[in-house]
Amino acid sequence: MKAVVLGRERGAEVRDVPEPRAGRGEVVVEVDFCGICGSDLHAASIGFGNGIVMGHEFAGTVVDLGNAVEGWRAGDRVAVNPAGDWCGSCPKCLVGEHSWCDNLASRFVGVTRNGGMARYVAVPVSTLHRLPDGLETSVAAWAEPLAVVVRMVRLSGFAFGDEAVVFGAGPIGLLAIQILLDAGARSVVAVQPSALRAEAARRCGAARVIPPGGDEFEALCADRAGAPTHAYDCAGVASTTRDALRLLPNGGRLTVSGVSEVDPAYRAADLVHKEIVIRGSCIYRRDDFDTAIELLARRAVTVEHLVTDVRSLEDAEGAFADLRERGKAIKILLRD
Image 1 (tube, rainbow, N blue to C red):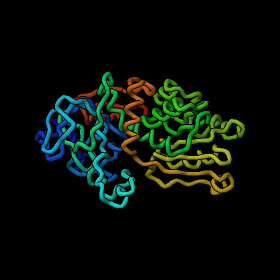
Image 2 (tube, rainbow, N blue to C red):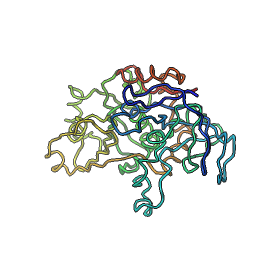
Image 3 (spheres, rainbow, N blue to C red):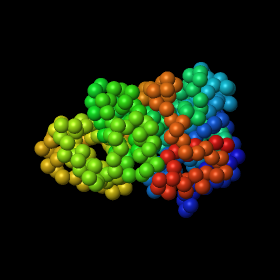
Image 4 (cartoon, helix red, strand yellow):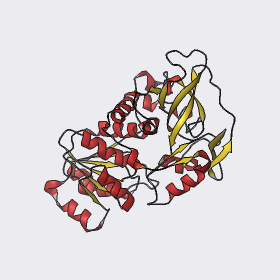
C-alpha cells in the first residue's frame, strides 16, 4: 500500500509499504482522512522516528481486531488519539499525569510508531475514541489538534466574560478563537500577518485581526483599559512572548503551545512589574480528546472552511510543499 514515510534525507516521501496486521490488543483502522500537522513539516529535525509512516491527526473505521480486544468490532468509526498509549506504570502515569508519561515518546502514533498517512494502520485499542453518529470522519480528523487547544484553554484559567488575544491564526489559533468564543469570551483579537489566515480568523469570529508590530499593534498595547487578560501563543515565533507581555495588563496570563526554534526574549520588567503568569501547554489528556469530539459533534467548532484542500496520498509530497509556502494553505487533509 502507499504511505507517507519519513525519510532521513528528503523528509516526507511516498513509498510502498506492507499492509499492517493487528497485534495483541490492537486493531487495524482503515484511514478515511489524515491531516498534515505543522510539526510534520519539521519532523526530521524534531525527533520523529526515521522510516515511520507519518500522520497523527486521523479518523477512520476499524476493519480488523487482534487478540485480546474487547468492546470493539469491525465497522466501528473512530478517531485515533496518538498519545493514548501511555505505559501506565511510570511515576507520572501512577499519579494520573498520562500526558507526561516517561515512555510516551516511544509509543506516540505517527511520531515514533506508524501513523495514519496510509490506507491502513495498526493501533492499540487504548488510542481509540468512538465517533458519535452524524460526525463525519473528515471532521473527526480534527479531534487531535482540537484536543491540543482544549488542553491549552483549560490550563490558562480562562473564565466566561474574559477577553483574549490569539497570536497565530494557523489551525491551532483558528480553533482557539472558536473555543474561546464558545466558552464565553467577550471578544477575541487575532494577531496574524498572512492575509489568507487573517480572513480565516475573521470567519472564525475574531473581533479584530491585526498584524504583529506596526501602528495597530502599538495602539492595542497603549489601550490599557481594553487590554485582554489572556494571551495564547499559537504561533511558535520567538517574538510572540515579548509582544504578549507588552500587551497584557497587570495579572495577565500567557499560555504557550507554540514552540519556537529560537528561544524567546522579553523585557523582564514587563513580566515582573505586571506579575504576569506564563504557562506552557503540551498535548492533552484523554478527557480533552473526548471534549474535542463533543465540540465537533455539536458544531460548537466548525472546521470545514479551514480545509484548503483534500489530496490523495500519492500527492502528499506536493501537499507538504504547499504547506511550507507561507500564505498558500491552512490545512490539507490526505486520503487514500
